[in-house]
Image (cartoon, rainbow, N blue to C red; front, side, top):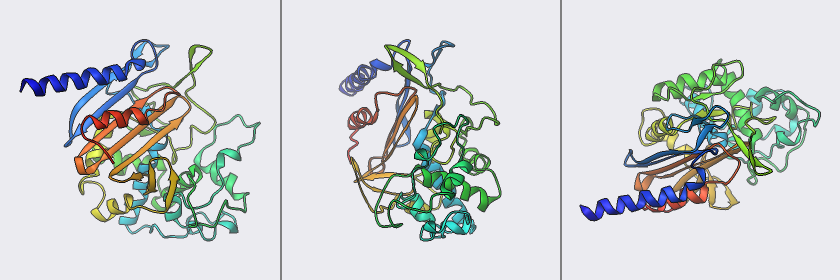
Length: 338
């Protein structure tokens, strides 16, 4: 027993040392390690709001950025279970205003980043001052009668695809995306503080604000021109709520076994580091299911090792560093290997 306690103490000391750059009066981080569904390490470091002097806590809600994509994908799978759509529906069935170049694209292509759609970020006019929203992505792509490659022929990570998926969710469900994801995922799972943030919606409780280090000082850089797009990265959540999401991926409480199998089924080879394949909103590498989330002022990562029933979540409200390597190092202390 003494050796076990000493080992746990050493592990905690090591992790605190690895997280030291997030501690103090600097933009912070929340870290959660789940083993067999139980939190075995949970700690927050640094500040959620430098200007207001509010420290990060396990309740702090960070902008998930691209970790949001797994929720968008889950919305599509729920609608498929409802019989409202299929993942092999032609995209133009739902978004007929897209040009002819999109004829061969299906929802599956969007989910797996194999659509060939042009990146909407490259289409936003340099003179634009208003934030881009999901519907704006459609308007931008309506003018682009071209693809990077024929749909299904190769892989290219696409925020455009997930922005369009949020619009498909709206058209198939008859609800705004933020309403649907709240009603069908967040509320049933008890993710009470998680939300797809809209300016006209409720404020984010316990919100972390994003920062970037510039000229030796942390500057608030919480929003960019594309931060209002929901389908590809607009969800805010905490480590506590994400633990509930993680638990739901092991059983039928939200998605059926068939839907979960689809979410984690490998698609075309990606050629990205540590990403052999992409599922529906999930990067897949051997026995590891994961996703990072990067947007101005935020860097996050969620790693799952289902065979070990191990999950590591690191949420940070700063531009750097990217926490993937750190999360892998932490996971290895509990036997997490791909």
